[in-house]
Amino acid sequence: MARNKTILYSLILAFSIVAPFVFPNFGTQLATLWLMIIVALTWDMTGGQMGYNSLGNIFFYGTGMYVAAVIAIGLVYDVGDYTNAAGGGIYKFTDLEYFGGMALGILGAGLFCSVCAIVIGSLTFGLRGPYFAIGTLGVAIATGELVSNWDWVGGGQGIALPVYPGDLDTGKIYFYFLFAAIGISVFIFVKWLYGTRFGAAINAIRDDEEKADAMGIHTLRYKLYTWAMAAFFVGMAGGVSAFQLIHFEPLESAYQTINLGIFMVVCVLLGGKGTLWGPVVGAILFHLFKEVTWNYLLGWQWVALGALIVVTVVYFQDGVMGWLMHKRPQWFGIRIEEKIAGEAE
Amino acid sequence: MTAIIEVRRVSKSFGGVVANKDVSLAVKSGTITGLIGPNGSGKTTLFNSIVGYHPIDDGSIRFEGEEISSFPVQQIARRGLLRTFQQTRIYGAMNGVENMLISLPHRKMKIWDALKTFTKEDYERADHLLEFVGLYEKRMLKSGDLSFGQQKLLEFAMALMNEPTCLLLDEPTAGINPTLINGLIDRLKRANSEFGITLFVIEHNMRVIMNMAESIYCLAHGQMLAHGTPDEIQNDQRVIDAYLGAH
Image (cartoon, rainbow over all chains, first blue to last red; front, side):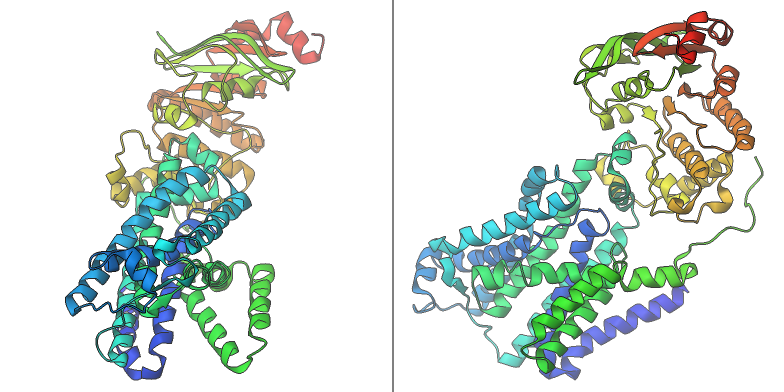
């Protein structure tokens, strides 16, 4: 069993490494797939494992983009001047400035989003169920509107970042591996986290928060830390997206509540909430579905997507992993013990 | 013997409904104390007040000599004063062992300790206590699928896992099959004698409480009606009247 797992993980890792070279035409698509896996896995940390369905995680993605961009630009030029020129001025970045700014920007984006999660969480974690979802959605939408009126970061125009200094194909592969690295880190991180006492505590909050309180668990602290961890990874992914997209603006690409903000939730529901593999499986299925309909059902793609969401939410709430767990409980260790181990009482 | 819980002149109203009025009682350390009273007499409200579920209007509640009436639930729980619920509360989506592991005490835990995995000793302790309440065979099942009685037993085991100094049990035998009740009484007594946990028990089943408790308090209409040994309570005319509705 353990050996099978090692083989499975090695195969996935190997495929992840060769994929952009084997399918060079799909480089950007595969990078986006990793982005979906990252946002789905991190959404599931609060939504699936802790029972807090946030519709505002896109806030961290958008904020990550802006923070990364502002850091990368601010290290070399005045941010106000740069955005004022809207790409028209002559602003050159050396390789060191580009890659150094990107590294610091992505890391800074993650850290800044973690702090944001603590602050927003302190205000919104008093809300339960749908109120929390709507409250966080409000935060994301409001921030998008505020940023689009903030001239220092380019207002509604957004920010145009420097282009990857190498050739285009290398750039695609470079961004693919950045996303893949974050995605693999998230997966390893949550796989470890869910096995610790921390994981057990957030599961307890999901199942019965009052009971968790009554058992002496620091519920608010766990909620804040969990969201801060999720925000860290989403912020970093946003930072990478900023450089990958080159140009981004606040409402459609950064704080895209109705696109990525909803997609991440659908991915998790489709794959199976509260499971380790569910968000990954869901992200892959969703991304495939989305790309296929965008290519072959053009004009009807949003209808198809809406139908998928409705069917998932109404008829397939447990997702792929939940369905498997129902059909094959023994795969998940659900069983009645035959004999009593240890001495009798 | 000193009192581990001291309730002095506690009052609590919900709007116009007076749930507790001037209630005083003392639970002695290391004993089993009972709390009885007709439905709606304010027993659960008193429990909720003690564990910090809602603020009290008036009075004082001390646990191990410390005033706790203004503390939130978690803080009181971390001091070792724990309660179980009348409407059993377990983590339904998880199996028995996971329920037990989550219940490990968070008392001395630092945040870094949360990043550790459960040790072999933790698993052994969980298995041992599940065996103690007779749920070992079912420990890998989703606990939401267990029967109500089994869930009660699981909740009791979870409380023991938390190593409380004092445990408040809200109707531990309600909904449990009569043949299992004797086993449960035995386990409650052993939890008291072997693990040294002080028990404070709300119970409607007179046979159970008379069998277990050394000292019994009786509430009626939110006020303390009587206090005494099981024998005294059984023969107290006021208690009998309260139960028969003469009050």
